[in-house]
Amino acid sequence: MAARAGSRSTLLEFAVLGLLQESPMHGYELRKRLSGALGAFHSLSYGSLYPCLKSLEARGEIAALGAADSVAPALAGKRARIVYELTAEGKERFATMLADSGPDTWDDEAFGIRFAFFGRADADVRRHILEGRRSRLEERIATLRGSLVRTRERLDTYTLELQRHGLESVEREVRWIDDLLAGENGSPGGSEMSRTGSGSGRSTTRAIDSTGAEATRRSSDR
Image (cartoon, rainbow, N blue to C red; front, side, top):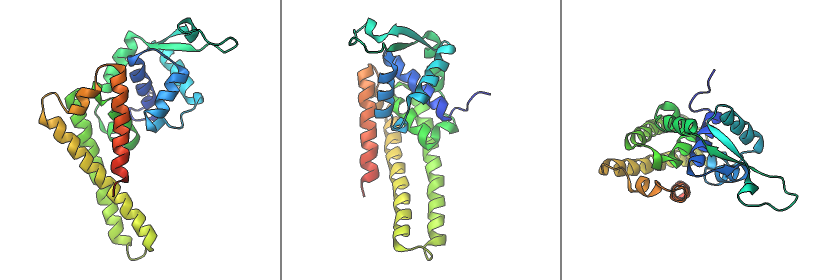
């Protein structure tokens, strides 16, 4: 049975294919990029990454080029690193995954990873994911507000403040998404962020990093 679109293993495959579309990389570099730029994989272990790479290679979606020191010689005694590159099948699979905007892409973990590659997605896909994410957050807000009304008399001050903080965090994300949707709907080519984030691998990396920084600033602003 195939893994669902929002499963962690499928999200990892999506992210690996997306990064390898920029350029060939060895496992160490992939892990560093996944852990640094994509916060959802901050605790990613080689025990999770290498089975993913083997699975992608077995399906013909990536290919092992050989030792990384064939391009840049490694120090003597160091174990050679295998470099992976995207194949035509891998490019096709990534394009198919990138075009998916179904409910699985609106969840917390999936949304963050998909957002990191928004610069390569079509405007309609971006808008649909943002709208779906907003609806998911509105449901969460309704649940949190209902919980506050029902329990405020039974909670101590600090527990109540923690619940309020959670509610405010979700409300901030809704406002952030509203800003993004306004940008997407304001021009035929989509938002300025998507245009500056597309193109070369370096530009995409900057877009991923700046997105994470913006999200952090908004979630901590009170």
